[in-house]
Length: 215
Ligand code: B16
Ligand code: MG
Image (tube, rainbow, N blue to C red; front, side):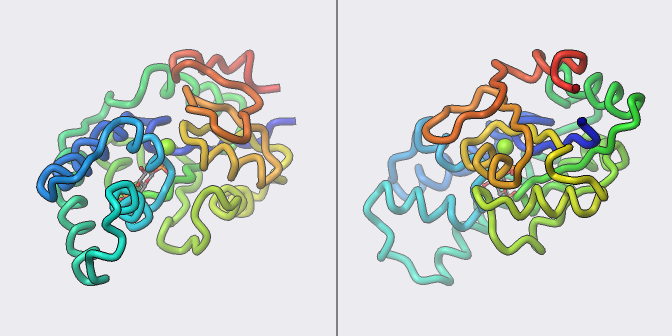
């Protein structure tokens, strides 16, 4: 029986994926490197430094930079990303999310956010949604990133709910793998499936129908 719903943030609660894309694109353009939507798809649910490594790999530039230079590039990308995030305001949640959340609350379900983004608290604050969840995982404290199940298991533990009674909602392949590895039911939001399939794939958050999804 469903007792908790654990949401990814970027691409599920809010469309920050476009901000990540624009910020990485700006860095890639500066460096004269290739970066497109297809490469961006591989960055979803992946940490900031790993995202940079993927962009460098795609451009055969893994060995070109020192760790300090990579840290500086990632910080520059993040500064631009944060400036985009600061334009978010209450009401900017993706379609259907607020209603789904209210239905979950009214039904007595627990809710949590499982995002690998270190900016998750800022994003939730700008959306005025910080107090809408029972628990927000701290990405800095989770050592193994998605596709490891750790962040979803951390949420289940904090909510005091058995993973088998949790539904995880994700837009990234790495996130679906993490949810399934945690032993939870996986709802995918327009996931570009390349390996593990979600239990239920929706085209967008507008299809988050509480009565159909929660049993
Ligand atoms: P930050 P999620 C992830 O968030 C994004 O999908 C991913 O593209 C990003 O690189 C990662 O957060 C790290 O974000 O640079 O803000 O720490 O989908 O797990 O909510
Ligand atoms: Mg996501």
